[in-house]
Image 1 (spheres, one colour):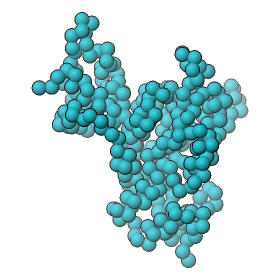
Image 2 (cartoon, rainbow, N blue to C red; image 1 turned 90 degrees about the vertical axis):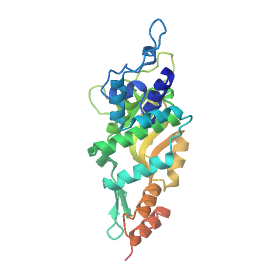
Image 3 (tube, rainbow, N blue to C red; image 1 turned 45 degrees about the vertical axis):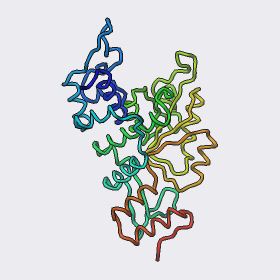
Image 4 (cartoon, helix red, strand yellow; image 1 turned 180 degrees about the vertical axis):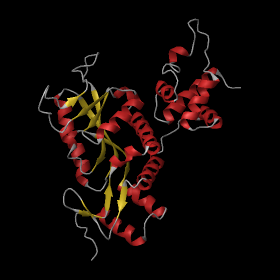
Length: 303
């Protein structure tokens, strides 16, 4: 027989598993956001209050879980977030939505002018709601596990691709959102930061902000956003991207120089590993892509 504590524990763990707070899970399931608040778990005279079967049914439907999955959460003592599985899921979504492309015979010309047998377009993901939702749930859980939601006051999206992802994540972790322009807009309040970012939090501390963007190559573009936030007296120690190239040493060097901890869901190495394992491309293409990833600066297409 399940106890009152066990039922609520399972609800809390279900929320954490999918990157929600308990109130965020309730909202996602179409319930009153306060349905699972800790203050509602006991009556004023300290008698236990139980969640209704209807509310449990709705959160199971919203997370696509069975009652067996729900009950199994009670026995979980320290359910770690499997980063390997997260990266594999992300790589599969990127490949299946054609947000990453391989073409060694007719390589892509990047903005820098460099030729590359690989190309990624994370902006494309916003058009795939189911895939997008899985990635944003993973992002919220990664951020919660690695940083702790108590260490984040605001989520900032970087113009332009980071804005929708910043909004999706802010909604899941129930934090206020702002966004940062690449340059002051030049009229009105001349603002580079849009939304409300207070100078100080209620306890007198600087607002702690996580910067969200879609991807990172060498990390150089992050400096504009981070400097703007810091000039507004925000504390910025973390940034999140869906995809980190993971092939340029300058990326880690730039992050260290700026005092930033980078979180990401996947890298090119994760995509290549899955593409090999599930034979998304022919051997010659995979070989050429691997050659590029190992030494992108000297890679040249085969004649």
